[in-house]
Picture 1 (tube, rainbow, N blue to C red):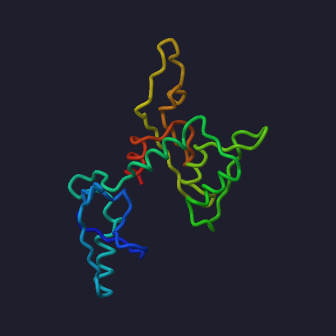
Picture 2: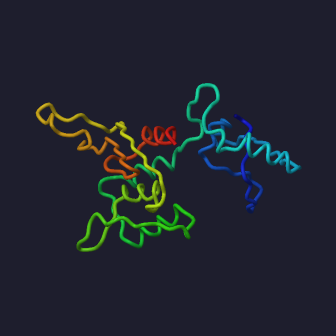
Picture 3: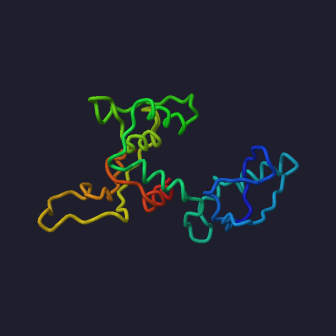
Length: 196
């Protein structure tokens, strides 16, 4: 797994850069590690490298099927902060973030705002739902239930309370690619990427 194929983009400076999600296979930790770059010369070699060693084909370890390329650091923090209960966005901010998640030219159906008055506001949970299913023609239906670290069981006197009503927002519940409840953390994102 320590040799993989990446699509190169030439940028200024002489530093090799790559996404921090692929640090695990290389055992990279950004403390001055040295890496070697090989450029396939023939069309056959480029095709072979892309098909056999491409990152998208090596997301799991062949040894035991564990997730190897997964979200880390900034991805986990931003997912956690975006899906908080008290995170709201106005139309301009919500639309801008939706355009950042896609090509910018892709069709995106804005969901109905969760708050209508005094101004229209969308939640971070709705933003994550748009990421999974940007418009109605996308046939992605994610159904997932995960208990996060912050999950707390209902009190004994409130046994009829549903798990989704966790006061800490620790029970993550996706239904048909819509995030109904929960604050996304490491457990959810690892589970989510292992399912897809």
